[in-house]
Length: 206
Image (cartoon, rainbow, N blue to C red):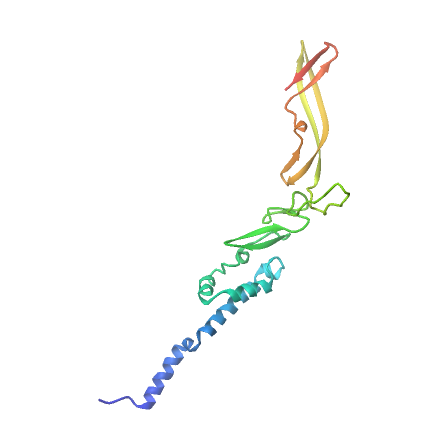
């Protein structure tokens, strides 16, 4: 039985190592490569480059150091720990990485859903502190106020005559968002009444 020559054996070994060269890396080196890929994908994200991601690069690095090799392997395809990478927030909003989803929150001085709009009025996420000692409230912490002007018209019948009546006034409210105003119930009238001096009666109009 003849054995292959040493030259042929070395040639085969060289080809094998070239084809399977990735196996020459240790587990630690493979893990480090994956770590760098994940870090680079987060660093180059639109949210990070625009300064819109709340999680800082230091926090990012700290979380990466806590991941083991199995977790890196599982989370690399879609970068699951950082959903802000795949979330587009409004230009006046910040993105918060939460477990399994991202949350867009309007920045100081703006209110809205954080994704489609962030207006300069309305209820914000900031705590509205105020007391009776004369302490100033934090700007933008209280919702903006609104002046509501209303006019009601109705054609009513008094005895045999029809009379066009008007009722107008103003009241206040606060802006909850771009579509809703909170106001007093007496500002929204479904019916009103007036006094008819000719007949000395009170007439109600619906």
